[in-house]
Amino acid sequence: MSNRLLLVLSALLLLTSQANLAWMVAPLQPSILALQFAFTPQAYWRIIDLWGASGLALYRAHFSFDAVHPFIYGAFGYLLITRTSLFDGSRLRSAGMLALPLAGLFDLAENTAQIFLLEQAHGLDSIVIPISATCSLLKWGLVGAFVVVVGVRWGRRRRR
Image (cartoon, rainbow, N blue to C red; front, side, top):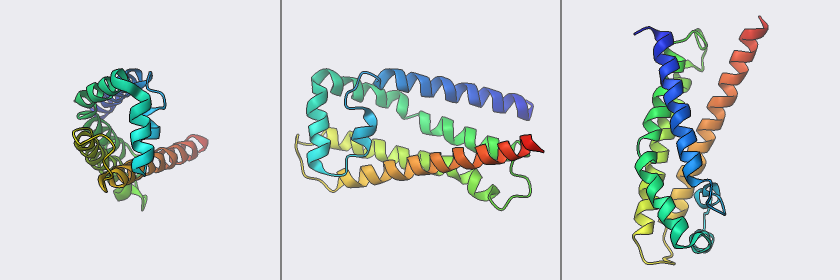
């Protein structure tokens, strides 16, 4: 399979997976991001309460898809860096190769923490809550940095 076809297929898989997850959790108010960045037990459990039983069921159901999603975006990021010339000769190449796979590991850790928390007594004051939020912060930070750096490199390349 050619590098270009592999990259296009991985991008399509990523877009499909991301769209599916976004569609699944769209009804949650406050948003899933609010829960991901809830560093305190009070904030965390308040969001769970606001979701109610139906929102919580929807959130639990999304994990079956979110268990695979980090592997999809991790593979896409790795392929984008290693199968294109976008980062050839760049000091950022190694960091770029690892950014999305590492974000995926933080995502999996966050998911594991969330599943654990949902199995505990409602209102539990647990260190797992800020650990989960920290994993989310690191995940989104790596994803954001990857997108910015790739965008800048692509933009510079287009101007040449």
